[in-house]
Image (tube, rainbow, N blue to C red; front, side, top):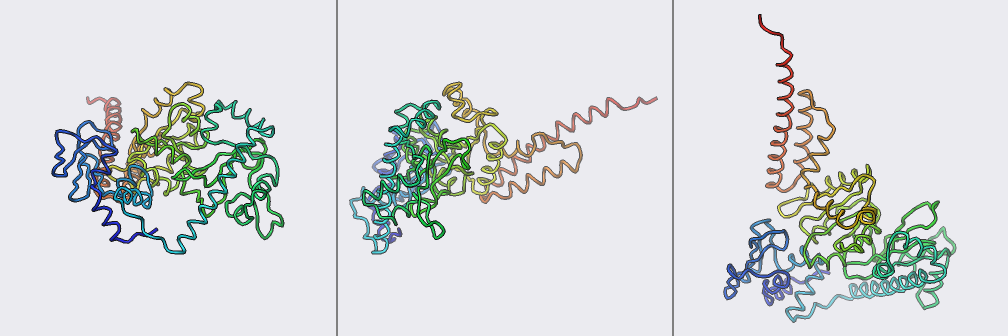
Amino acid sequence: MRFPPAFLDEIRDRVPISSVIGQRVAWDRKKTNAPRGDYWACCPFHGEKSPSFHCEDKKGRYHCFGCSVSGDHFKFLTELDGMSFPEAVEKIADMAGVPMPVRDAQEERREKERASLTDVMEMATAFFQERLQGPEGAKARAYLRDRGLTPATQQSFRLGFAPDSRNALKEHLAARGVPKADIEACGLVRHGDDIPVSYDWFRDRIMFPIPDSKGKIIAFGGRALQPDALAKYMNSPDTELFHKGNVLYNFARARKALAKGGTVIAVEGYMDVIALAQAGFENVVAPLGTALTENQLELLWRMAPEPMLCFDGDKAGLKAAWRAADMALPSVQAGRSARFALLPEGKDPDDLVKAEGPDAFRSVLAEARPLVDLLWMRETAGGVFDTPERRAELEKTLRELTSRIRDESLRYHYQQEMRERVLSFFGSQRGTRQSGRQDGRPGQG
């Protein structure tokens, strides 16, 4: 939704920015001068002990002198709380006591259609939950029990079961008056010109409801129970409600957990998220069965300035970490980066917390590497740089990598860091080679 600039100015002017930020920070009593509208606090975007985060009511702006984040009312809510821009506007308007602008007829119609579809998705969620607890769900319940998920955890994430039937969900919804067009629009059935009779999209699968940023169910993920299934995991198709590359599983719950502090952790799958939540890690999200996308990375940055990207300890997990690093590199800047937690080989988070407990996962997080370390490790680990040509090739690769950083200041610091690492790395190697040559030199006589 587009908002008139005059409306945005009005609600900004009516609400002191300190009132918005003050809901998330404790103002420093020594540095703050409230009568002048001048406030200081420890920055909510990065960990610090001395207050370097400043906001001025007169300007309606904030700035951190530690990590360089800055913005207005709306940016604070979108960057720290992960709200969408319309959500931030709605919150500020509510604080200002100003009614939201009236939507035009077309937008109003689309909003009503979306609301109708989310109602259908809620009905489907309840259907799957009921089937999980019924006779048909015995095998699914046994699987979840074997994976260590308690009934309370299953209920919390609203896990369900899609029976092995072509029409069970379709007929259930139709019997409750849901139009065929709405069932199709929600992606709950397979249909098309080449399919004479539509049939249920998910069959004989454990169901994971996927909520949007407000907690409304917009899609499902399904885990096959049959070992010979063509796809172990399957998601809803893209719909009016759902675009896979724009959504993170557990986003709404994790965003709420971040209000207590910490950063967001991105893992690879549904089960990892749920197992970690059961182990006490509530600030965890996951992409939906695919590699992390640019839009999903932007969502992570809206949640925290330095998200923790956690990858399985196998070759595929390491490749996924490389891809994520390459994707993040152009967009990093002061106060906006990522750390990479690499699990022990052959382990995923679910395996690790079950076998060794939550502290083992905390240890992995404590050893997370910054982006610059991951890039250096990739380009140098196992490499042989015993000739001028090979050393020059490494320097060229590092220059090309760092040149992709769009932020000029950060690009300079990355290039400086890489130069220092290269000098140290080659200096130690050169010293070893020279020592070897001296030891082997024929004597003078």
